Image (cartoon, rainbow, N blue to C red; front, side, top):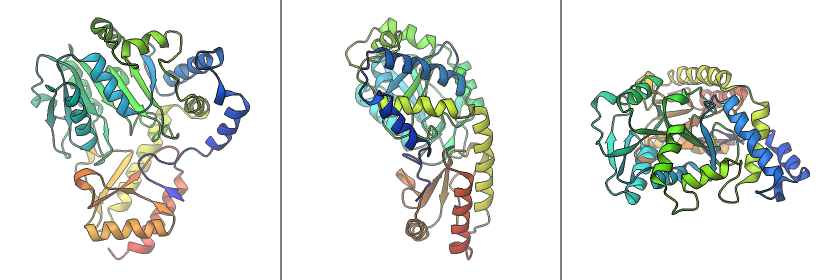
Length: 355
């Protein structure tokens, strides 16, 4: 099965051997307060900073998912409200969840063919946390470095949190330009679902100490205190943390992965430009995602493409949210090999050359 689903997606083939090694090395039953786990956690933190360019003074935490990170950040860093900037379903979902915890949360929606309009934002003075999604999985857009820098410069007194689930560990993000970055590992990390990585600047820890919120098992302040000793507040996904260590040890630095994924994304967009009835959902090339290629066609054609692909053991991503019926998505993640994309191209040429 060729798996181009945009998450959970294909895992690195090496994971099969790593699973056996984890068993043989005793990690499946190791105490999460013991020396074996502490050394594992310490090593993973070091590797994350080295391989995906997390600033050295940022603090790294483990959670179960990016969705849990939404909750942690709203609980621990806001009393009044957060402000959410989005153009797709996952950014909107974050806002809707925040509103359940902090009813005064505010939102700013922008068009999927425009850059995040920082100059047009009117964020309230009592906002404590600005939130956005760097790579919007639902529609195949992304926020480039310049708007993030502009947002940081305009709202220096606010914390900025970025959901980078579909780009972290695949793209060379300028992580120093925001206070918080987080991602689940079932996409660009190339691992099974069930673990998230969150990186927080020193400003975040300062604010968490000021607010001193301790009402939840994963309150950020409690997470900070435990990770001073490379431990977690709860029994973590030790297996996935072990798999993360093994992968990071062997993967190239993120700059090289970025170059590869960017070239492959450009190639895919060029390839699909030859079809008259299939086109990128996002017309503005500048804001097209490099890691989630979203293509649109009429509903009947989309349904036919997905069914035929599955019959030939090719799993494409369904459309999502408002684009559920008229789009399909193709993951461009590091674990997927170039030859698999060549096979995907052959599928389209053999079955849809007439369009």
